[in-house]
Length: 236
Figure: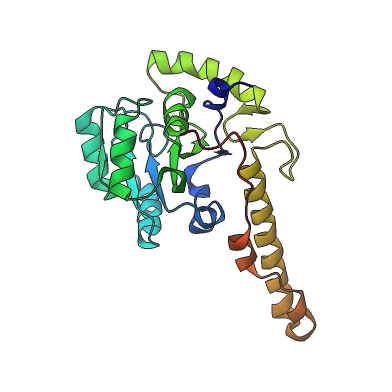
């Protein structure tokens, strides 16, 4: 694969934004996020209240992770949702071109490699994020409702994603242990497995605190996991 192809490769593919937690941020060394709007946070064209998204964004900010809304939607729509979510941000961002990515990075005040670009489209969010040297996170689109040119782009996205072993964003043909996923997604799967084991151990400890005490798996181990930086990562 050549460098241009690698610019279309997301570092992590997730089913939805709620998989992005403080533990996920720590695992991947991220200090902040730039966020797409339509079909990433909010269904395309919707103005309905989204309490769960608001809570998610507020929880991350309360944990010390700055967020910035980077949307190609109309400025007024982006402004409305930025206010509702309590975020700085911009509409008509011109993704994937780098100008507004740089502005977002200046607002969160972090180097590009410590900021995740979260979005549902390869040819805007992922391409622009990789181009800017960011950690790209692709999520499954919330709905199929989109502009005609976006629906066409979805067909091309499927072809690109299949080259990396995915039928669609967040749905991998790889085995459950993370084999074949982008390496950081595999690490995230491992972290989730450790968390599940820790929960099971805690349940055992509650039943028999004496015999189970030494079987606990410290959940802090997931925060100390180091992922190897691949050649498919940051593009300066």
